[in-house]
Image 1 (cartoon, rainbow, N blue to C red):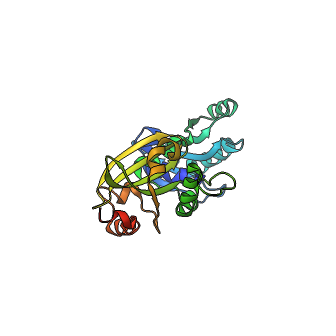
Image 2: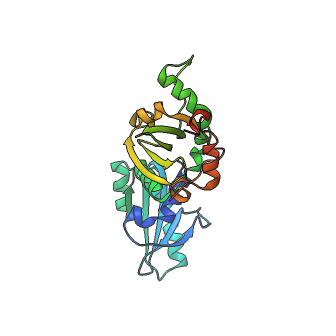
Image 3: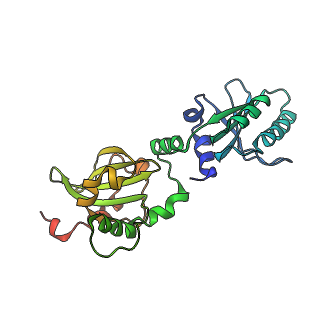
Length: 255
């Protein structure tokens, strides 16, 4: 996850993070002192400048926001202008510095960004490279888990993966596994018509949380990963379904 992706989520869903209705006003507007990340307008016409920092709030964030405040107050003298910093963690001494400059602090951990991303179907493009490795890494990771063949070193991290399974009461299904940081999910689709059946959540990674399904299924892959939340409800797109069905083991297609 990048700082830019944190901005994307806050910009599109401020109510989910900040618990108040806000209207988009400006994003990354140029100014003589730099570019404030996000500027919202509240319900009574006031402006809220939000500076987003990934990880720990750095030392220079306070004077940076104060400069932005001056620029916007000069442009909009009749509007109330407020300041806020959002970071994954905020040390107490910097929280106190923000308080002394009338800057509101919001400490929002990375897991919250990932949770909301999962809810709204936002995909972290910065992690898509890891996801694109899933087809070739999937078989290696599974063979390592089962103790098959020679394996040097630990399996590489897999963020997304698919398998074909008959482990759900003998039903033929496609399983879509997703790892988010600290948690995971498994979506279940009917292998015949692609109907979405169920989604299950688990802690940690899917290799452990859904170990039985993961080790008993047949690894399959997709040339392009679909957005599971947006385009795979109530069923898999026909092109995705066809690509998955072509990979069902030949011995199982007519059974």
